[in-house]
Image (tube, rainbow, N blue to C red; front, side, top):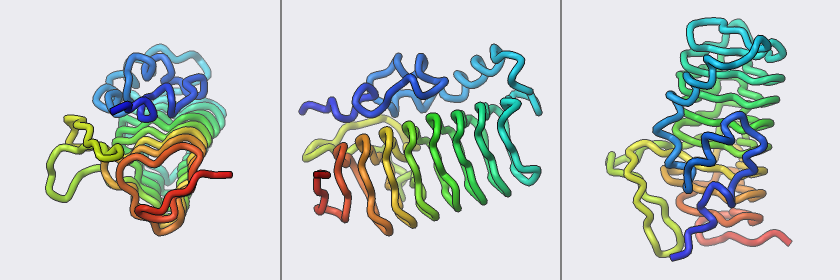
Length: 222
């Protein structure tokens, strides 16, 4: 089975993230999840004077705006121009890229947000990688653990690709739009420039440049 659409090279433009060199070491994006914490610790220690270490192992760019009610747990990096708004909860191991919006009551854990990502309203994003200019509508979440606690597999056509991971949320390619109150089930991979209808329950691979209207109802954009 040709799984090229699931590869990092097909999902992301690595020039739009501080983590580009790190991600380039892997073939599939979920392979990078286990090392995000260690990468942030190494990267943060080498950041320049434009970053302030506002707490141990928490680095915030001088042009970023972090609400006083937001909680940033170590390790994390908040890049230039990013907004971390009221009551956002960063549990740790999070890279928040340039000009990102992390909004009201959003929770992040073990994530890479490429530049210009928006998770602005009541989102949970865990064990996930969100590509350049991707956007999650209000209330949409990544579900990162299966209900039976077995290891996550990625559904790709009739194939099941073993990841060896218990925790794996979603991999969103560049330019993905996720509709309000959608649930991205464990092992979801969405190709570039795809739209997910509101109130969707998504599982497995959704092709690039398509519209996901529901399970078994995916159409290519014209």
